[in-house]
Every structure is written in C-alpha cells, then in structure tokens.
Amino acid sequence: MLFLASRVLEQEPNSEGRLRLLEKLQERDFMPLIRSTRLSCFQQALSKSGRVEEMERLISALNNSDGLNPYAQGELFCFEDHVFFLLFGEFASQPSGMRAGIVYETRTTEPLRKLDSFCQTINLCLADAGEESGESGETKEDDTQKLTVWRQNGSFIHQGFMRFAARQDSDSLSTIVCRENDVERVRAAELLDDDYTRLFLRRAKESYAEGLPVNPSADQMTTPSEFTANKLLEVGLLRREVLVSCRKSGHILFSLPSADALAVMTISHAWCSVCSAAIADEKIEEAFAPTRLTSALLEDGAWLVNRLHSILRGFGVPESEIVVEPPAGDGEARIMARVCDEVFLIVMRDGDLTPAFARRAITAKTETEARHLVIVATGTIHNEGRMSLLNFAKRLERGGNDFELIITDGASALAVELQRAFDRVSQKVLAEQLCELDASLGLNVARFINARFQMLQDSGGTHQRNQLLGVEEHASPTKLLG
Image (spheres, rainbow, N blue to C red):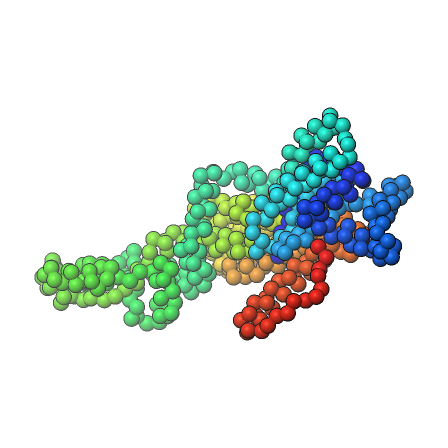
C-alpha cells in the first residue's frame, strides 16, 4: 500500500521560472523525470545537435502563446523507496501556488521529514533562480517571506476527524498511545483474537473469583491444550499457582507462586487450622490463574482496540493519524484513522452486532462525517442490525455521497478487509491528485508509480531469495532514468 502527503506553498513561478526551478533541482540531485524524458526526446529529434534546452524554451513559449496548458505543469522525482511530486499553479487543486508531495510505502523511513527536506530544497532553488533572473529587491523580499509558508492543503483537512480528536483528553490519548504500543499487550491481544482462548480466559477469570481455579490436569473441555497454555503463560495472560487445600473442608489454605514457596511452607511445619494436619499432608495441586493483564484486556473490549491499533501501525499508518476514543464502559470502542487524507471510522464491540449497536455506529458516523464506516463484532451478527446498516448506506449512496460500509466478523477478517480498503483508497487518491501529470508523462501516472513500487518490491524479494540460495547476481547494463 502506498501513502501520500503534501504541502502547499503560496508562490507560483512563471513559465520561465518553472524551468529554472527544475534546473536548480537537478543540480541538487533531484532528477526531474518528465523533463529529462522530454529532453531525451528533443535530443533524438535534433540528431544530438546540443540545442535541446533552446527547443524546450521554444515549445514552452509556443504553448503560452496559443493559450494551451503550461509546458511545465508538474514534475516527478524518483528515489529508491519514495517518489516526490511537484504540481504548479491552477493544476495543483488550489487557486495559486505550488504543491509538493511524497508518495511512499511502509518501509520508507521518516517520510514526512523527507518531504520537509524536499520543501526546503525547493525554497533554496527558488531563491537561486530568483537571483539569476535579476528580480527587484522588493519582489525578492516578498517572495522570501512567502517561502516560509509551506502548509497542509486546507481542502485535505477533515473537520470530522479534527473534532473527534479534539473531544479526547490529551493526557488520556498519551496514555492510550503508550499502552497500545506496549509489546506485552500487543502479543497478548494477538492470542485473544481466537474465540476459544477468550472463552477459556473468561471462564478461568470467573472460576478464580469463585475460588475454583482451573486445574491443568482437568478434562480438555475446560482447559486449553498444552501448546496454547504455554503461549498464554509466555505472554502473561496466565500464571501457574500451587494451591494447598484442606482435605476435610475443601477450602483453599494457600495460593503459592511456585513449588519453592511450597517447600518453604512445608519446612516451617505449618498446619491446617481446620483439621490440624501438616501442610505436606493436605491436598496440593497445580492450577492456572488469570493475570491482571487478562482482566485489563477483556474489559470493554480493550484487546480488540489493542489488536486494531497494532494492525493499523503494521500497515504503516502514522501514529499521528490514529485517534483512539477512551472506553465508555459499554463494551464498545471507536477508532478513527486517516489514510491518504481519507478518514475511516472503526466501531468495535467484543460481542454481538445488535440493532442498538448499529444505531450507535450510525450516529457516530453522522457526527464524524467519515466516508468509510467499519463495523467489527466478535459475536453473532444479527440480521436486523446488519440490515439497519445496509439501509443507511443505501440512503447515503442515493443522496450522492461517496460512502463505504464494511462489516467484519472478528479481528482476523478485519485485517484482510482493511488491507483491501486501504489499497483502494491509496490508488484512488493517487489517481485524483496526480492525474494532472498524465498528459505530461504520456501515461497514467498513478499506475506508473504503483507499477514502479511493485517492481522494486519484487526485485527486492528476488534479491533476498538469491542471497539465501547463494545465487550469484550480475549487474544489469541498463540504467533507469531518474
């Protein structure tokens, strides 16, 4: 999946200024893909006469005189794990100015820092180009002030997302972020994705509260397999205890953390206050006990929130684009995530999808104005609740609204559906924002960028497989432009 981020600058160079800007960027190792492709074409057309830049200026002037689209509408700059783009003027979806952006993937490190660095480079190149053009001091001073106003495009700021985030207490959000990123909780939430594991832990929690701990030697209908039990012990959802019970009354005398603790009790010559028997003569058995982590994750569907948060981070969604609503105590949870400037509202419940739950989800969607509503329920999906959501989606579609409804059963199905939805959004947003460059490059830019990243991923996988197999690789004589 590809991500996109952009910034807007309140300055728009003229036709000649655009060419000078691209030249200055090329001098700073930002190879303009569209311009270099055109120059290569001019070079072949002129039989390598060396007058390609003169021809470029001539074609640019002809475009302007005929009132056609500007010669330089934008540009692409390709790097190993990201692509920068630059859009000029009215073709950048704003009244004036330029839009600089980055298209990146999950493995790209610090993409926003790279984008900020690219914007600063454009500032320097604009200043250099202005000095060479001999602009007046007053104009230059005004432009210098404008160079500091790189900002996010206002048309991409989702007010519903901002309102949802503003309603959350900042201290609570900080606590939630630290909690959801805790490695122990992430590993535990993955195991709780299994229905039987959650059922067993709930029963174990209730039994332990009633003084009836789960015995590992009991029948397999009430205890997990040895493999599952070891996993639960490893992630801290269960702990082993040694129970000492009175043989006469059956009540528990001691709950000890280990056999060593039992040895200490035995050596101390302690005895039962009911039957006066020595501790060593009483009933001793090993049992499973749920931990505090189990109680915390099973309460209010916290494990589901933690699981979804880790899924979103695994997809590459930045932490700043995820807002988790603190639990309200009704067993439901809500998360909003912004992916490529498209907002997803995810409403979850560790239980059934009931008509009442569906109505609350519809209300939350109306308040946040999210284009994508994702419903997650781990229990039974009631037909009445499902039909209520589907009818709501149909009403929005008939009203001309761009809306998507996704209903999933459990976190495993959610991961698959979210991956598909994010891919669709990524491709749509990429096509909408970069379609202005299709005519300049001579092909669909969004498909070109998607194909490029896919080819690089495939070649990276092949390289890793060859290393594992010991296959010798040879350098290719072909060098990709840009």
